[in-house]
Length: 92
Image (cartoon, rainbow, N blue to C red; front, side, top):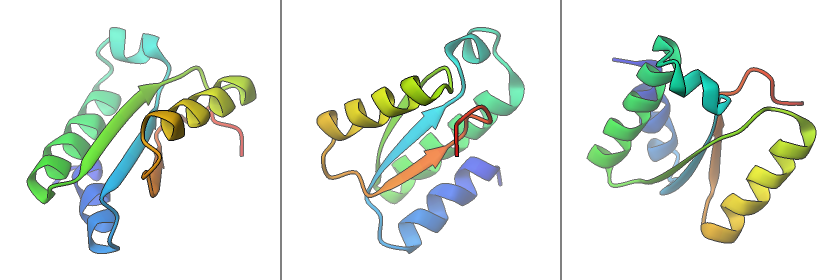
């Protein structure tokens, strides 16, 4: 089972139903980078199987893009209760 699938299961078991994925930079997906695609596919597949709503937003990982992406997620999906941060450039 993939990391993404395990993550979806873990969040579902905790009671989350609306999950947002802050993904890698768009270029990572354009290159079809294996780890990013496998993780996202695992998240999506298990989320669908568990009846979770999942939104994925790639972003550059800077402070400004992180803040903007999180703001847009909550505007689009105010019931989001879990964030999965896949972007290793994300500011802490």
